[in-house]
Length: 512
Image (cartoon, rainbow, N blue to C red):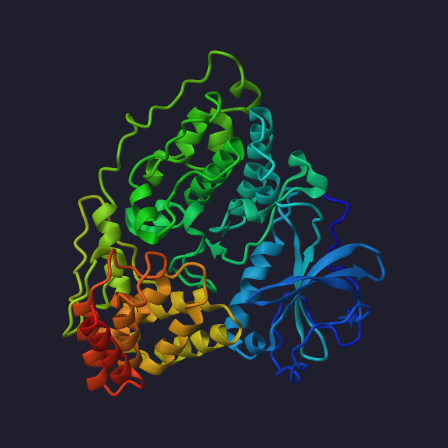
């Protein structure tokens, strides 16, 4: 056990004002303090003295703090007040914290507990791991083959323990691997914020929709092979991380959503990876989960680290010979179309055609592909479920967690529910500032085809030669006729500024 890890003390009276670290209080909390950065020296939960701010995200701000009794350092995430106000969301975080607190392995940053203090502030207390991320280390170049094996064995052992405890990470990437003091042999996996509990009766804070970074996500996270997420999902992502470590850069797995889908039809090209590493990497990166190792213990048993570098044992993997999956591509397309709930997916059709919503596509599974059973009541059949999801979407937006709000929006639409167009449009504007624009394009197209004026205007701008660029538009080329068509539709719908935009386009056309 890592000496730097502090657990919440068992069998002793909690400090005055402290609550059970893993149970959400049954009585309403006091109103949370106004949001703002916590200054150094502040005492949290009568126990943790804030040293400095480490960073922040949609869920809250993270601080380095010292346990006043033990002198140990911890990373403490202070949950945003907007999230604390959402009882259902907090219930899910507490449930996941209970599972993650049971994962005790030196290769996984320990979760020490969830605490609510007398002031109504909630904290997630974690082990503090000081060191660069693997992503930062790889900017200096690739790791030697022996170091890649060390990293594999280290992370696989920690991840296997998490799997045994019932948690799937779903977001393994070089950013989420910390190297304390720069040591690969001491690597730690962090950020189970997207974790999925393997108990099928338990809900997850991010639901069952997509989670994880495109570049390191497994095929089933895109809907392939039934979309079932399990330990093999993490095995695939870990394989991509280890391949990146061997190359000094990530494999080319697609920078857009469409390219990412296509890249997962075959095994990635491992050219340039040390031949001694290729056999087990190829096994981890099989597109079909059924062809990957069943679990990480199986991987380590089949390819022990001490034998992988023995001359003559390794054989390069031919990408040309890598078999494409027999099934899954069209299933994934069908799944994603269902997620669109009739709105369509812009990247499969270069030119949108108004009028009317795009037709939905019925999902007809290929033989052997069984869609996962529904895990929640249909939104269309239970207005309360729809109301709860809408409340969560608003809470996530308020917390700056726009991608998760989008995922819940997809869930609601997929289940037959509907959302006020103003709410969807507000979320689209939130997403426009994200690096990945796919979610924004999706919502704009959905709203435009449903007759929402501002979205129709925005859609016209995507075609307008005056504004079009390959970097910001999903369309391969500008189309003045399509821009005019959408602007005219926006005028009919009463969108502010649409008439001026249409007149400007026509004036520019007259000057050509």
